[in-house]
Length: 169
Image (cartoon, rainbow, N blue to C red; front, top):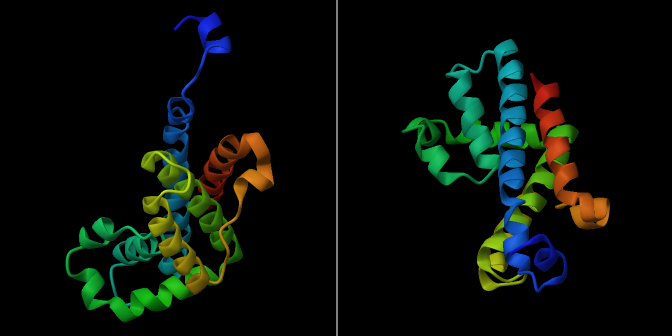
């Protein structure tokens, strides 16, 4: 489709939104890294009696609801489930981490909505309910980034995530 067709023709909103998916995915990765680095710096100062890097990964995987990541740690997550649960609660007490998670969850829900093909599909509500419950458990609400930032929601989420990661090093 040429520029005139693109400007004035019938455009597919799903295709148009697809260009934002890499930015949303990168925002997630930047927030994960930011949380991981914050936790490892904290754990380096404390003696947890376990591999601090695995512990930080396990906490991040739990916060981000990444079951395959958790499984990648072998039996570590199972052996240290109580410690991980405690550290997840501790991490969630950090206002900056809670804020980052709230924004990341919102971005991930946008991606789920796009991926399901409908803004309020069954797949979306399944994931949204899980994420809302996790957020409640951790003591925060998922931010409505569209209300917060309008049409710049994805751009601003990405910029926030990059800054969060950089400030966490």
